[in-house]
Length: 419
Image (cartoon, rainbow, N blue to C red; front, side):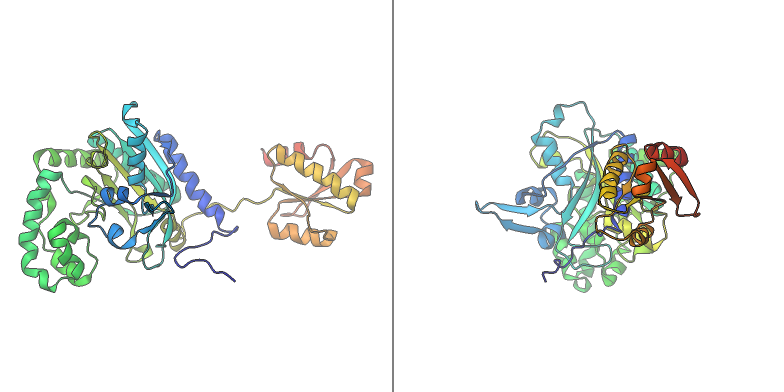
């Protein structure tokens, strides 16, 4: 037997309705926030992620699935959704559209890392990317979209926000970080030491306990914001507060990818262990230009679907009941079975979820199977029913039966279920 690759997971028939619930919630939020769906390839040229995500990131250095195709070109399975969305925006000339261009995606992504609860090598994301607006109101809108999505799922998570400024104010902050971390480097991890010269801001993202103690005393980026970035951040906070969305300013949030600037945010929960971020994102005003487009402000977020599933299960968030067949119609003999096939087909074409036997079971076995499927109504068609043009429909929840004209089963179900 060939087993599933490590770090991947099957979605079974009795689990898929949970995925559909999350995806439908995502699409519902996208609709009311006027977001249009985009779909990008599962693999892209490796250079896209090296330039877009950042060569100093763990994603590029350690986690990408990169290989040469038969033409000798280096391609990579996408490790996240933003870089591909930006490439799509540039390549398809969407900068010439009416701005802002507001998009969303539901996509698989791939990272080679140690599998653990809520973190797999193949995972799925719901993401939003908005291009063309530099307004702090757009930041607030994207954060509200994320909040609305989590609320629809019944997920409770606290919002943490920060501003990591622009290139100008971040340069001064990086100097302050180097001055602070320099005397502590010897007792910090190898990753932090490598980040010290390349991107000291990323040290703040370290999860090693020893490093976190040093990081706790580091200068705060909010003390180094330039006037424009400070005003932008204040505008975001004011809008969130005005609409009653609670948040905490966490100066240690920098996010793990190099393209972020100004506003960054995370929705966090301890119900899924140490890896508590269930949704995160921020502004990336320089990325479109970095990847060859015209200077274009942008902001977005992504939420991991597997992590959301884990959180919902751990906190008993309310999934809807799995959709069950409404009616099962059993046939007693070959002629009846052929007639039942036509009945069920007609019901399905009219939107009724109906089922019939495909395993040549006895009537008793068919009733047992129907009961296992959770069906609400069961009916039997045999020689007498075909002759009399009537059918008995049994309600499996209370045991009551009613006799209905065999041609009026659809009308009966519509009336009973208020369809």
